[in-house]
Structure formats: structure tokens, C-alpha cells
Length: 94
Image (cartoon, rainbow, N blue to C red; front, side, top):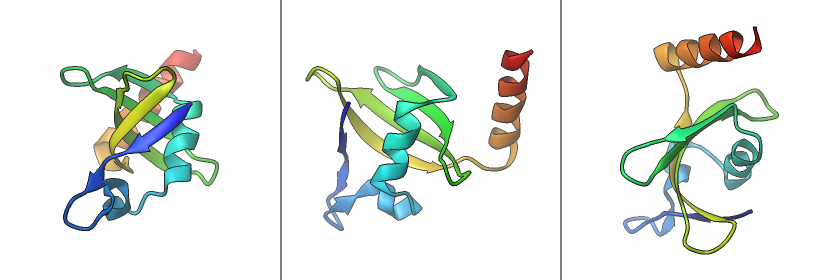
């Protein structure tokens, strides 16, 4: 899968960098998501865990090109959202 990233016009860097997320981490979550569901409009929300144990929420749009996605943002999953995700994952395993 080819992954393209939204570039912040103010910094000319991928937007995910503002959240301390690396491109490799996003790709890792997209390859093996714990959840992948519809977001707003045509976007999708992918949640997963990296090999280092970090939980990320990735917002992306399937691209018009085959097997390509456009990542809008990605950030750490924390607090209540992380607890809810873990609870959903436990229920799925039962």
C-alpha cells in the first residue's frame, strides 16, 4: 500500500509531525489495524498499536489511485478514548 501524507502549508512538513508521529508508525498501524471504520464524509478512522506499544488514531481517505491512501492526521490515543478502544478489543476476542 502506498501512503501519502498531508503537508502542513505553514511548515512544509507532514502534519503528523506536529503530533510527534512518524510516517513508519502510521504505515504500521494501517497495515495491521485493530479497528478501521467510517469517519466523516469519505474519510476513515484507523486505530491500532505500533510495535513499540503506542496506540494511534489515523484519519485517512482512500485515494483515487489503486492501493493508495492519503493520511490527513495521526495522533496518540489517550484517556477515555484509549479505554473504550481496549474495551471494544476485549469484547471482540470473547
